[in-house]
Image (cartoon, rainbow, N blue to C red; front, side, top):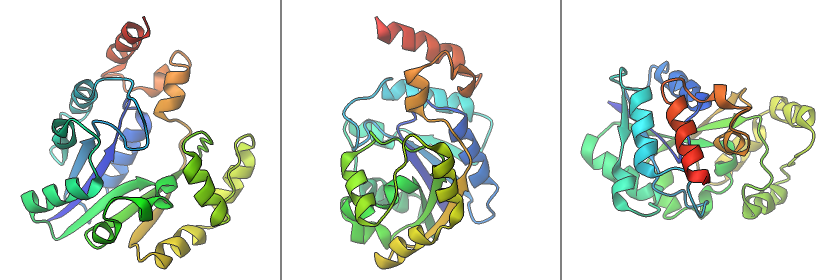
Length: 225
């Protein structure tokens, strides 16, 4: 069997996450999809919602899909968990023929700095999703890396960013080839992120799955006091 791991904070889960999952499940080379909820993203200092709550919401969203498993492995570690540790766990548990690891295109340029990168890149094939969001406050280190590899970060011009994304994917494959990364690149036409939702939850409320919408709003209000 072939296994795909889709990790993240899911803080909170939103419709773009669902679209990615639906896309992945349509790929004939994926037999089982693990949604791996991070206790704490290593690039973030805090989370908005408790990890157990985020997991509960994802289980509710995908409760009728037998090919999706929402895992609490990293939550049970009680700390930020390196991806290599999680991959080794699922490799031992499932013994899959192939492991696919889902990341955002922004994270591609950070991979060489991930813990045990050399081991990780030999264990998984990366599925890299590019989206139309350029969050220039995401990570200063990322911006420096992007600049080094002549990646243009355009915060205020969405049309310029779209043109850049549609132009070609060569820069991503060039980077991957340089570092020995096996990957597939997908352009994902989605404008939403968890950060955008939390910045204006009333505006983006419809981007939260209806199964959990009221719970997310109630938890957001409770945490705001």
